[in-house]
Length: 253
Image 1 (cartoon, rainbow, N blue to C red):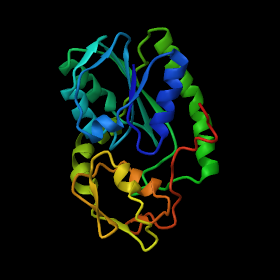
Image 2: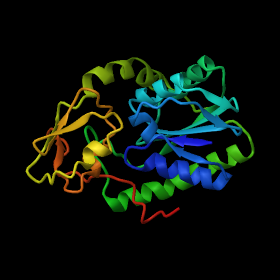
Image 3: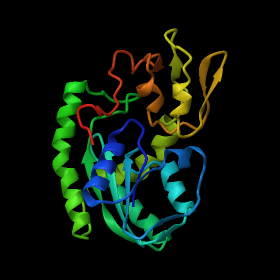
């Protein structure tokens, strides 16, 4: 079974591409994460988790879900991580996660996709995003081939910077940067409440027709990038930047 979480569509596309190619079931974890649903999941085939990269590791709330959810049946797990640049030394922590669940770690494949982290980085215009996705197809095919052949993913070459990024930097990054304090809504808001609906953390409520952010943000960027009126900003950084969501019309499945 292929399971995924996706804030703006990159990991969704990769998961569905892999699932279709290997003929396996694909499960969107959004509703389970949003509803804190940790019911047992069963698969008789190796598990494949597809996830975005947050601070050079898988998202903390997804890691917590994996830890508390019984994954019955097959005891082997592949991980695929979409990222804007790289996933650092994420594999080390995924291997520890698998060991804690007494499951066999089959590696982590990093796939560079368009950047969606509009809170901190430059997001691409559609034309550039399409080019990045096309370049990623070969890497997705490599993941598919390995899974079909029942081979582990090849180990990534890890640098001292990777170890630093996924280790100490990750620990500092969350408390310093991963919060919703800078989100605000402009007068263009149409009160559609889509931002609240797409938030996996239930961190957005509406007060007098306007969104209010709580203190459980995970920086998935779904609210700001999926706002149909582009009425959400993140401090000064997001102003004028493209709102990135995966261009499904260009890459139909």
